[in-house]
Every structure is written in C-alpha cells, then in structure tokens.
Image 1 (spheres, rainbow, N blue to C red):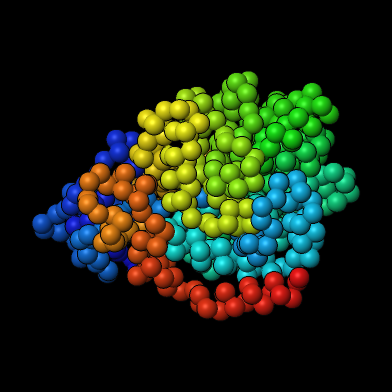
Image 2: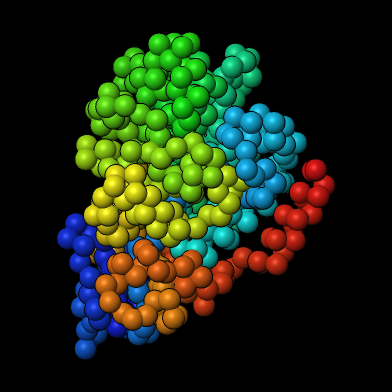
Length: 433
C-alpha cells in the first residue's frame, strides 16, 4: 500500500523533545512519514489504509543492535554455562554442522519472532549470511548484516575475509535499501592484530562499517592484556589508528575502564548493550551510565537466542532500566524515557541510521509499531512511557510496519507462514543433532 493513516492514537515520537501526542495521528506515503502530530478533525488527503488508534500506542519500530539470528536453532540447547565453556564445548562444535538451509530457516524464525515483538531493524553477525539476507528480504525487515570471521588460522581467515568482502559488495543496499552490510570480525581474542588490520583496510576500501564483540567477559580482557598488553578496546583502537575512522558496532563493552570509554567516545564507536544475555552468561553488567555520560551512542541488543533465550527487545529495555538502578544504587538512573530511547533512536544511532529510522518524524521511514493498551497489566492509564517500559509485553504489539508496509497485523505476521517456519526449524535441528 502506498498511503497509511493511524488516527486518534497515543503517539510517542521519541524525537529530540520526546513529544507525545494524545490523541495523535501518524500518516505515511510511499514508505515515508508525512504527518506526525495532533489528531486532525479534517484530513486533506485520502489514504489506502486507515487504522483506528483508539486505545492504542504508536511508537517507532524497535532496533535490535546485536544478534545472531540463526542461533534460534540453539535456543534452550546450551543453557546455564559460562561463556567460554558455552562457546568451546557446545556452540562452536554445533556451528560446524550448520548448513545454508539451516541458517536460512533459523534466520527466518528469528525474523518472525522479532517482527511480532516489534523489532523493525536488526544487526546480525553470523555465517552463511547470504541466507540471512534472503530471510530478511522475505520478511520485510530492515537489517544490518555482517559475515562473522575469525583469524586465528591465517589461511582460513584470509578466505573468510574474501567471502565477507564479496558479501558486502553484493548485498549492501539491497532489498530496496532495507539491507545494509558491514564486516564482522568476531573479537580480539579470535582476530589477531594482523588479521584485524586487514579487516580494517577492507572496511575502508568498501566504505562500510564493522560489527565486533568487545570486552564481553573479564576472562577475555585479562587474557588479552597478558598477551598483548592491551584491553580489547585499546586493541581495536590500535587498528583504527593505522587505517582511520570506521563506523563500528561494538557489542557488549562490559568490562571497560575510563580509558576504554574515552577511546569509544573519541572513535565515535556505537555500543550494543545486551543486558539479558550478559546476565544469563554471568558476563557482567556494562557501565551504561558511564557510556551515556560520555555521549556515546548506545542501543540495545538481544544477542542470539542461544544466550538470551528470546529476541524480545521490550524485555531488554525493561532490564536496562532496572539493573542499572541497582548497580548504581540510584533509582533515578536510566529512566523509562531513556530506556525507550535506547530501544529506538539510540539503536538507530549505533547503526548510523538515525536520519532514517528510530523516531517518528516527518520525512523519516515509516517504520512503526502499534501497541494495544487494552490489557489489565496496562491499567490504569498513568504515564504512558512508564507503562510501555515497565508493564508492556511483546504480545501487546498489534501492528508493525516497515517503510509503510504492514508486516504484522492483529499480532501476527501477514506474509510469513508461521507454522511452516517452526516446523522446518524443528526438522532441521533433529537432522543436525
């Protein structure tokens, strides 16, 4: 459909002034927002589709800044383990058995789950990324995709980088611009400095970004410090000093010091904060308030479904608001409004897409979600943003649009075959292990 109107809703814009219009209207034409403001008595335009917003909340689509979509295949299979045991003993041996078909269906399951939970954009790093691109294209979601690479073996590392470069060249700005690409070196402990330098040079030549795990665990930081004398952030900064600035998504950044934070700010590195995964793996809690105080772009990520175990970004926003109050011994930090910004415009900033998505403003992409506030847990109707962060659930999301195209209606994906996706995933995991 080319034109869309949602009328008479509570509209949470997440713009620079955090404007809320109640009642308000949101309209789009040819995929972009043409009106966001107070409800209008007389509309000059006619619309192809009109939805009543009575008893509904409209807000920007959620942005998942770090996940591994196809790891839905591992959901509930490797739980209650420390990260390095989890990776070395379970995940990496299983990943060696993955096929392109498995990654496609696992990614499609992730897209289905995310869209029905209000995620309209996700950043992914994994293998067989062409299959994830196909799933993202089919789903209608917006995606920032990276081929995951390790460089401990120079021969396989060189091959992986070549494949990653080819992927960026082929898929960047595909699916009508919904899919963007970058390079995905896994982490400093799997990507030695010479390899990381080659990745950096390739990113500069391609004019693309990098998606990397940094400072996720204390063990990682200590071992790298012993080996190189550098923290993971310093290790990455050393590469940037040699090749120049690169737009970067840094996943986790849990164990960082003051110097690390200063380097993140200096290099304009965006941080993907993953509270749920970090809690489950006992990796620690990122110093979110310190990052925010330095005006570092921070968004929220679910990480993969093997370490979370869901892709519910509303849950991540609630966790972000709660755990930092406790760790800072201050109930005023990370307010509901700040948590909402992390899940929307903050994530857009991390991905470098803040001019296109992350808030409801005229001219931006019509990426939006509609939440039904008719459930008992959303009454009484006091502060709408507080109810959204502290009380709402993914199941409350009723409608999802990306670029003005309806992907979810009445809480269910419109174009994806839910039953077949779940059935195919179950068959695949039974075949693989």
